[in-house]
Length: 231
Image 1: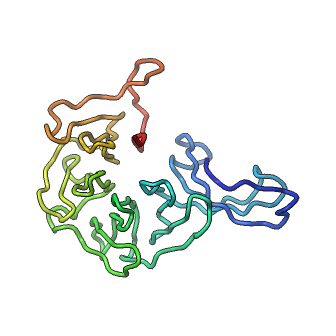
Image 2: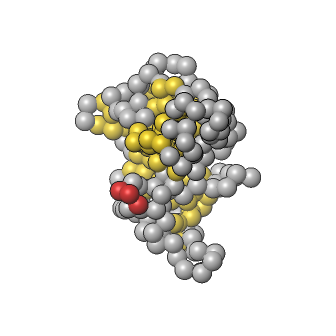
Image 3: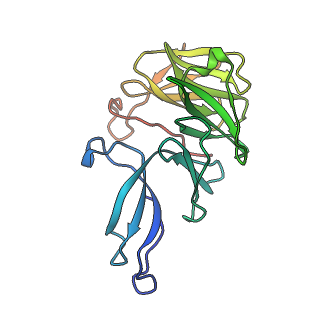
């Protein structure tokens, strides 16, 4: 996990720390990739109340800020655990955020009425822009490194669309798939679908490959929430 260091002698009073934790599916009833807000008791970093759980953490490209779903709205925190703040809600239920290349904008899912769509908002603004109607109905958005494209899951598979909402096209046909993520060069997208699958964006899935475990050579059938190592 990532969090602040606790000095028991100099910091005896309870204080807050934001931690990102990766837990195996089913461990303590918690899914993978949870952000937890903890009140550390002052008796050691291993003790404290971590009952406040957040979802869908995403690091900015420079690694200095974390955005996450704080329960119907988004929140930000710096990598040193300072600057925690909740953003004013853009819709009735904001979630699944991802950063733009510059760090000035977020793409996320939001709910208006009973419908969940993909939106883009600029930090510091209180307004949002829905992707073009044909592209908006989706989930798990991921911004390309160039900032020109967004990958998302929608009915029928994994799609890529321009950040302006134009040019929607399917790059992978699948049903139980989720969480697409662009490679650092923007040429590949990895997603989960009974394991991890990598697809070439330009060839639209004609050369999709399953990701194998480098330790044993088998396919990663239980893997989820993929992310690429930065260059």
